[in-house]
Amino acid sequence: MKTMERNERAMASDSGNGAGTGKVVTRFAPSPTGFLHIGGARTALFNYLFAKHFGGDFLLRIEDTDRVRSTQPAIEAILDGMRWLGLDWDGDAVFQFARAERHADVARTMLENGAAYRCYLTPDELDAMRAEAQAAKKPLRIRSPWRDRTDGDPALPHVVRLKAPTEGATTIHDLVQGEVTVQNAEIDDFVLLRSDGTPTYMLAVVVDDHDMGVTHIIRGDDHLNNAFRQLPIMRAMGWAEPLYGHVPLIHGQDGAKLSKRHGALGVEAYRDELGILPEALLNYLLRLGWGHGDREEFTLEEAVELFDIKGVGKSPSRLDIKKLLNLNGHYIREADNARLAALIAGKVGPKADIDTLVAAMPVLKTRARDINELADGAAFLFKTRPLALTGDAEALLTPDARALLARISGLLKQESGWTTEPLEASLKGLAEELGLGLGKLAQPLRAALTGQTTSPGIFDVLVLLGRDESLARIDAQSVAGEQAAEL
Ligand code: GLU
Image (cartoon, rainbow, N blue to C red; front, side):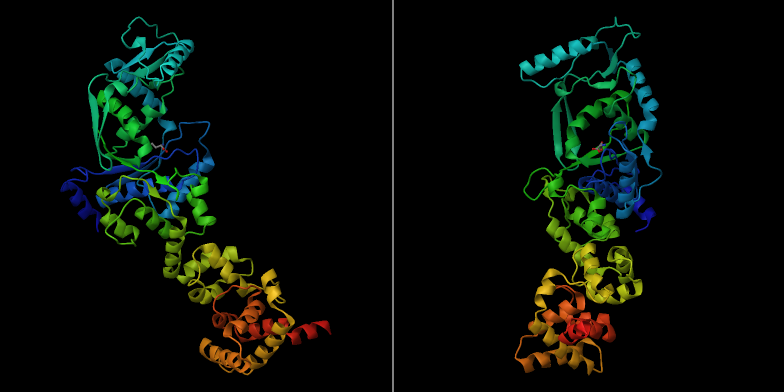
């Protein structure tokens, strides 16, 4: 659909899913303290889809205010991961730390407005408050005595705190969670500016969301509590309030919070270690927590067209790597052969040749669930004689089996056509003649042809290797071959 039409759709107030009547702007705001993990990728995807569905903008903000834990490699991994998934953001990525002066300005405006105050509590006084809260088994919610004092000396060390509302309640009409209400008394006077004048994360997020014109904040539900702390800043500044959609986190198969053990890996690990295609990961993440009837497959374009945040469930979804791999196998089978060949060439090894890989791909790709498996499956094509045998293959090649290979070689040498049908007919004929199952013939043949005990179908292997190479590999392992080697 054209952007124009989408904009019209946004303007036409799509009631119920919160798009409103203006331009939709969403953002993905990862902290580069780690790589782009799977939950983050899904958050990015939902923000992308929501914005694009309404012809809006999807922005990227790198929340790099934690100077100790933020790293350049993590920033690059996040940008790479987004590009790999095809989640292109509009405009340039915004770097939060670079905007610290602006954040501090807002805190100063809030001081002037009376929405914030200077707090001169000393570390010892804070420790005492903490100890008191602990003794009373209550969470520490700071209401500083300085909230209402006017006799402080700004030349002395102090922080700037939010003067949080103390009465009433705040209700959020969350696009995913529904109505959520928190008593204002529960919101503490958290710090906006530290004693060294630097802004806190909580302040930076709100200022950036406002300045970037963000209309919809879609993020993990671990940030739901933050929304209630962020709203008072917006209200104090008289800024338009965004709509929120707090998406349940992804859990592991066992229902526990996602950890490394469950596959809480960076998306680059899904690409490199698990061999997942981007379209498979996108589709899997999309369906993890969102549904459109029982439809299973969507291109990114189709997902843009159909995405509706009302379809996001309230309960955490479970990551199922097996399901992801099955889906990946499906996408591998659908993928373009030349693309797959290019993807695996480097993994197959220095001898890999693209033309051979492309020619073999229709056969290879029917078997693989991931790109690494696909590369492993292709390796036999480029082995050099005499083939190194795996332990299993070695064990299969008993003297009897090697004698059988000599028979097979003799038979195949008379073969005039070298395509699967005649080869199959000949080998089946031999199996029958010898009173053996075809498997008994295929096993040593596979070992000789590939050096392994697993491979594509044996007739496909013969065809892919071609007549000369096939016969040479068989002869190298047959009794006759062994004798020749001994001479
Ligand atoms: N930087 C936060 C995170 O990575 C996200 C903050 C937000 O979306 O408001 O969890």
